[in-house]
Length: 100
Image (cartoon, rainbow, N blue to C red; front, side, top):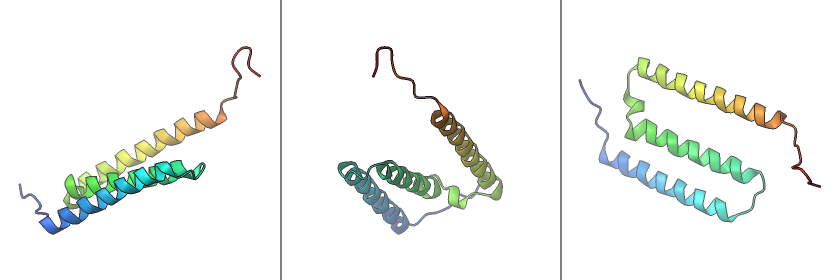
């Protein structure tokens, strides 16, 4: 089976991008952006996961069948997150016993 060859330059660029994104995640933790802190952190984490899967796991160079399987996994993950958030957002906020 022929394995893809990723140039060292590409690996270094992806590595530096991952370091920059990790630094951005850390710096966002020190800034209070309200509810947008979590949105930005999840966006950065998604970008890091995409870079890792695409280049270091060679998903970018795989056959179309593997890409369909990866897309199915991402869609399934989004379905599970949507259902979990739907459940969380529709729950009644009950105070503990003796709470005010």
